[in-house]
Length: 595
Image (cartoon, rainbow, N blue to C red):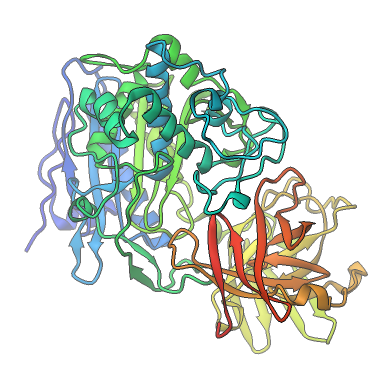
């Protein structure tokens, strides 16, 4: 049976395409179709040019899905006049080979934060909110240690409050109140806690819980009828089936086995919305028009200016990115761009909006495999712009950026442990090979100087290359694999194991009996938390083998290298000197001896 795909575009159409044509385009037989829609009065765009651009985008998505092991993907494209195209690729049921539908809901995660900001800016327009007022002026019950200064609403909107990322708004015990780590407004630190608080601020000012308020204030006025403001069991039947790694206690190699995700209930404002690509295109159209839509305005022009102002540098979103209210502000090829990502237990999403060219792209994947589909959304903007200009299309980006290491030669060499074990790292064709005779294991770049080896002996932790913090390397200058690129690599770590380059003169540090009692595996049934493994290496404790712990109190540790990090880990309930519980990342984890 030949599969037909209707590739209707606004202002014109293409004939039905057979499966053979689809495979030639690279879409693959899993493509579930294209839904045309739009408002009248669209700016004229050469239809042949746009058709070529969209066909090129489909080719990229086919290769991207295969390389990234994405089960399914939904995509919405919009301009200032309406929806350009919405399409679906791959599967929502892998075993049954049920294709993703354009009517399936995908969880958009932290993209919900832009909705939060717009609702609060509406309340500001109505004179009910001063964004420069302390949040406790409106929520006197808020529990938090604000040692470094009062938190303004503005600080919460811009992730500059100095508060942790994932602490619960209502602490499980009075002594567990979240702690501020730096003066508010001085730097960016992403905080779901802050947007959870903002959800309660909306409830206080609007008189309705966050899900009801956002539905009445944004979803209904825009006609986003297929979008749900909270992820509940009731909405489960409309949400695309989604996937997580089968083994959730270790780094995920790109093509590792997957498992079907379970039900999830989320109504916190930090990330509770599930939507279709078509509805997200309606939302993007409003943003591309500066807060206006066919029925009026979602937010005033002044409110939209606040929404899209780059208030504070946000390196988490890229070296040139800043953060506005609920959305990152950046540039793409010299164009003003708004963007955000969303990560859920089993969905990953990205939204990019070119404010100058007037195009928006939303992409979402029904799996949580450690990446966001930013390359899809960004390439879509470039392709749409080339179609508008009737110019040559941009070069196709690599499908999987983790496959090629830009400064592979800086990692090459021999690494030897204190007990004489040896690992060889070989750079070959822009890639890295870990050689441990007689085996050769390809390494997958994870982030910075961290790599994943898809091998049973290296499964539980990433491989972490350590650089000399005191010296620069001319050979590595300009490399972009990690924060320390440009400094020579001196050692290789894996969990509790540490291997030094003989020529570096780096020396192993003996283990500490005091620190040894904290090491072990800890587990929470909360899917947002899951497993945590604590190891000792080079005289320090490390979470997951990558994040160092620094003692700041009685069994209390700061997580990460930055002295201003608000993230903490606390070991509790000691039995014979060994902790039975770990409080970390907003969750409570129990020690698991059998792991």
